[in-house]
Structure formats: C-alpha cells, structure tokens
Image 1 (cartoon, rainbow, N blue to C red):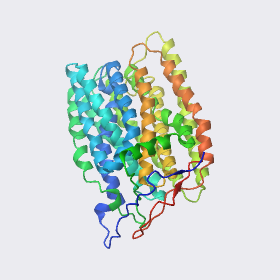
Image 2 (image 1 turned 120 degrees about the vertical axis):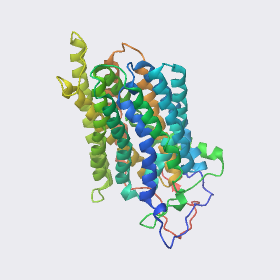
Image 3 (image 1 turned 45 degrees about the vertical axis):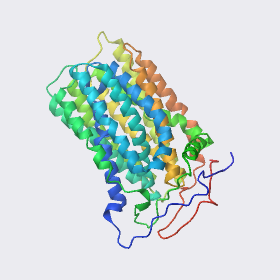
Length: 464
C-alpha cells in the first residue's frame, strides 16, 4: 500500500516553549497521576461493579443487555472520538468521558432497589457515549505523553490504577456482603459508595495539562498536529482505518476484552454473593501482576523490538488458549452435574472454578497492554495516536457489544460463548503476527524543546 501523507500536511506542529524551571504540574508523572485518578474513580468503579457479576444484580440478563447498549454506543462514538478529542483537547475529552459513569451507577442502583429498566438503559446509553470520549482520550494520554522507552511502564501504572478501582471497590463489596453466603443481589449501600466515588472523576480530569505544555525529562516534546478542519480530522481517521496494518489488527482488537461478558455470567451463575465480592477484590491483582511483567519485557531496550513483541504476543496467546480449554472442561462437568454447582468461597470446587477467572484477567490485561504498546510504536505524534486509540477502543467495544448481547438471554448455551472466544483468539494470531513481522522501530517524530518544525515533508509509512 502506498504511503499516506499526514492529513494535516500544511499545519505547523504545536511546539512548547522551553521551560527554564521545570514544573512538577507539567511533568509526566503528574499527568499520569491525573489520568490514573480518573481511571480509578470512573471505569475503575465500573469494573468493580462488573466484577460482582451482572453489576451486583441477582440475574444477569437485564444488566447484560444494558452493558451491550453501553458498548454498542461506545464503539460508534470511540472511533470518531479520537478526531474530536484532537480538536477540543485531551483534557476536555477526558472530562466528557467522566460524566456518564455515575449515571450508569445510579441506573444499577435503581434496578437493584426498585427495578426500573428504563433508567438503567438511559444510564447505560449516556455512559456508552461518554466512555467513547474517555477511552480515546486516556489511552492517548498514557501512551503519547511519556517518551517511547517509558511507555510500557506507564501503561502498567495505568492498568494498576484502573485495577485499584475494582480492588478498593471489591474491598467495599466484601465488607458489605461478607455474610451473604447465597446467590442474589448485593446490598444497596454498595452502589451508593460507588456512585460517590464515580462523581470525583470529572473534577480530577480538569487538572490535566494540555499536551503542548507537558515537559518530558528527556526534553523531547509531545508533538501535536491538528487537522485544519473537522472534516479533515474524520477523513484522517477513516484513512487510517483502511490501512493494511489496522485491518490486520482488527481481530486482535475485537477479542482482547471479549471474555468479560461470559466471565460476568459465569460469576453470576456459579458463585455466591460473597464469593463474587471476593472475586471483584482479588482478581484484579492478577491484572496488575501481568501488566508489570509485560512492561518489563516490552521496555527492555537491550532486546530487539520485534523479538520483544513476538515473545509477549505468543505468551499471551498461550495463556488465553489454556483458559478456554480449561473453561470447556469445567463447563462440560457443570452441564453433566445433576444440579448446577454454586461455589462459596474456599469451599469444595471453588479453587478450580475461580482460578479460571483469575487467569482470564491475567491474560486479558496483558493482551490489552500489549495492543496499546504496539499501536504506540506505529504512531508519529499525539494526533496520530488519538486516531489509533479511538479505532482500537472502538473495535474492542464492538467485540464487547456482541459478547454482552450473547449473555442477555436466559438459558443460553455457554459452549457458544466459549467457542467464539476460543475461535477468535486463534483467528487473530496470523494477522497480528504479520504486523509484528514488520515492526522494526518506533515511528514517533523526535522534537526537542526550542525546535520549531513543520510536517510538510514528513510522511507516515503505512506499509507494514
């Protein structure tokens, strides 16, 4: 495929003036802390509710339908949100993204105390639109603000902050529901605590610095390249989407979080309330562990970049393949039993059923971080990164829309979900490997403080 010029070819790069005295509030650690704070309060608490199975409800079907709506709107908005955030700025994109989460939490609360499906669906719709802006913005911040050699480390920090939300939320769940040794819904107080925390995301997001004012420790700048018009922004997104590399990565994007829908149903179907609360607390440690393990490999500059990528990818696929083989064996046992099992914490059969959830999260978070790191190697500037992140998150959300929709009907055959997860995981291997085979170096343009450049003669290579 021929090379494409950057769509903002005649626009000058936004270059920060060199600072004589570096400001902590413009530093990379502070920006990452702000992004992590929003991630903790908004999607972190959302994940904590999801970690209960069915958002803490007694039955998964209405909540699964609501989540399908969230991800359907999320997918539609997120692909375009990269372009929109590029125009309005990542700070305001992040703020828009934080608005919808507490409304979603309120919808779960009303569904729990006095079922009102309309408000749950309204909150889900608003959250889906809002989340599209959030994930396109935050991913661009976490990958684009740090220097390339530090990206996997900061991705691990971010994943840990996002996991800290469910860990803290899970501790709350566990404290409020530890005496509930039967199936059912969690206490109403659980939702109130989560909604209050979710409301903090919006004010925290406003402390983020504009990209052109960020100060890296190596004196390189965050290169920002806005398109001259809104139409040009959207055209750039769709031009990128049609490139060979992005088309090859779509199966990996689709499957990376596909497991979440089935994991929620698995928890709700086979675990007591307090064992689900335990899962929402403990499982996220697996994501933190895998995030730092994969970061240690991907940031290791002494290993050739292509080798790092291949080792990481093969390891992740091996783990995920193992989980779906394991799920098939367990599901066969559960279907063959006279009565479906219900696992209480640390009682007969709990370990083998819960370990599957632990390793779904372990492999899934590593895969997510790997994909963020991978697209970061192919982006030239923050604008390009915004487009890439919007497409990545958009197709992830599309996959989750299908996954959650499959869980919205009672008596669905679990082998269908297991088989689809297993099949798409294997399907993504060859096209992703082709992309990795063309990975030779980071494509980011290097601009140091005080240097003013234009992109007129720069081209973005899209052959690989």
